[in-house]
Image 1 (cartoon, rainbow, N blue to C red):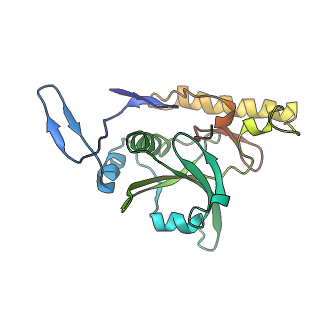
Image 2 (image 1 turned 180 degrees about the horizontal axis):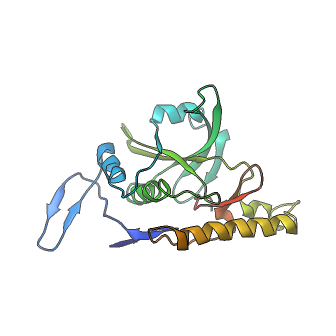
Image 3 (image 1 turned 30 degrees about the vertical axis):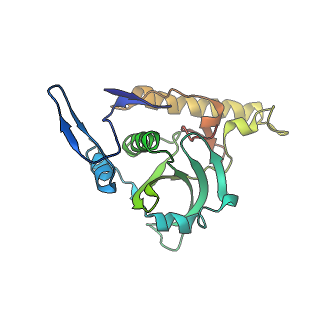
Length: 221
């Protein structure tokens, strides 16, 4: 089947609550709940990824226990928190990240696995980088998180005239448009898989510290 989420369209396998396999005369469905099942789905991707695997404890430490003052976004997928993690290459260095919590059982599982399997293997200067993920059981059930590079200048919508007293200059707006177009062209034309960005809007164009634009369905509505 072809699974459609807010950004992407690609073949995907159903996810349900219980872990079991049911064989019928026409099809076989596999159901996932445990982190090991989800991790097997990630590892079965055609291309390897270099994503970091985090624990919930590590992400709590990175976000000061998901402090509400570090909440930088909220959408249909879940809340997004600013965090700080240690660099693997330089242990004494710290890296700012954005930690997104995948709330909701069915919808959260599908979109979480979509982003890990797709964003974990694509790379482009105008796509927000996926740093890693977390899938861990707890007393509250399955805890799913995605960890992205932090984009300090927020999204394009925050800098448009109706929302900002100091909107972007026309020169900077043109640069943002060019960056976003490059990101779209890469997804639509240069990837081996069929990746169609279906929710292109100003809130999904994020800006780094140098005002370079990178696209992602960040869940900030």
